[in-house]
Length: 310
Length: 310
Image 1 (tube, rainbow over the protein chains, first blue to last red):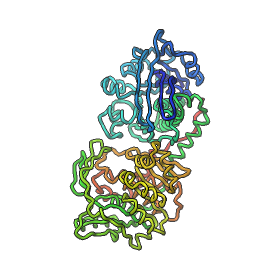
Image 2: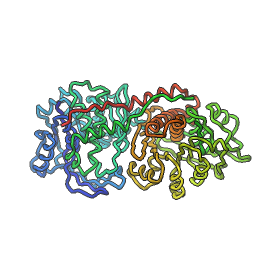
Image 3: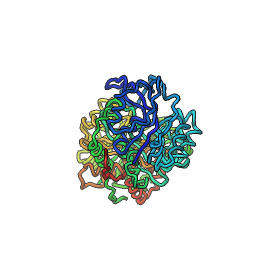
Image 4: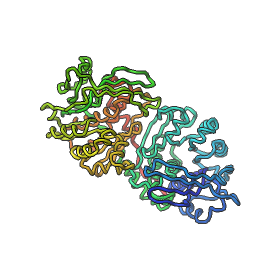
């Protein structure tokens, strides 16, 4: 019941219609871990600089995240990202990206990190993802995320890494780009043909879809009226999804468990966007998650009793 | 258990990756009626020219569509549309639009058409939709479609017409444009505030969402790998949706019935895209519809048994 995530730890500056923040705790591994912390002991592997201080460690630990494998690079600065969202929050502009200590990050896993049951390779260079994958020999389920940059400039490496994992969690546009296939169902199956048993397409405001060799499942997004800051929603989704898998160590990672994981991913992402950075997830309660799962279940149920057709 | 649709009857020329066709039976009222014909006696109200012949009437009647209210304009030509879809079928280019007899169409409803239980005002000028609406005094449920053109050039008229119907079935981008609201949930509620009790957002490859004052329901699209020609998919959706409402005349048009209607709309649209024009729906069997409803139900079900959260 242990989970390791390897990825970025960052400070984010964000402007939206709702206001702006200069310095939010962010990064894919952080958003992931705060979400997965509701389900399983989560270890974060990623680099930080001297500017990453007690307040940030305290925030992570307040949710039980294990920070022992956060690598402090003396003299370095933490990864920094600045972005602006339009009134239509689906449109985002990156204003600044300073990789800082993340530029030369070489993940080094402690024994405890490498021994995790469930491992998530957040969006980092695919060669590094592969190195991590090879260290995690005991894992029951390993999944990865990636991005358009790696699909462009490290295509072959990414395909090789995908061949070594159980699950791929990407935006639908990335799945299409990766496979040069505009039909999502075909794109997902092209990725399954590379080796994974599970492909999840994240579809932003539209929800998400789950593809296995013989299965298909899809969920709408939770109907959120107040999207304050969508940064990290995809990582929160992955955290809820992988957390749910980790929380059920005695179950086979089958269609039924994966569908539940989709629901938890959806719900965690829906909370993430309700405030800046990790603020909403940091004050989230377990009961709120359970309520929203029940809500989502109600919002997707229909009676399929037959109608007399002509 | 009678249904009337008022809208365009057309010939379409379509080019897709799968090939091309010069002269397909098309138009919103046609795609709608072929779908709804599985559920209820459907009367089509719309104009045609001299080029609309026995073959076209026969195609409609083969599905039991009642063609008595199709208005033949002597000396006229039928509405003609030509379009091309890219390899990504979500991208469509209109190559030609000849309104022909549709340009001066004034819907005139027979007694039988006006007496329908369920009425669909397909995408025509909103003043005309309102005139039709006012003739259908006995209707249990009336819904409309529209398009970006009317949202732009007949905004006030469209808002007035929306105030007189029970349901609005639009693309999600149209709902956002109509209300100048980029958040779909808010956009849908802004339309509910105009009077209707039901708003459906069609989301193309992502499925559809149903909004009522107190309810939310969403369905993914059926996972189709072979999209041959998406023309008319939205109208087939509306036909399946409204058909399901019409097929249950003794039920209140409540959340439960509307959800079933969403499923039938989704399934009819999924068949529509599998061949050029109306070809697939014309050879569709009732058992195929029932199978796909069961499939869709399986693809959207998950177990919401609680997990021990931390």
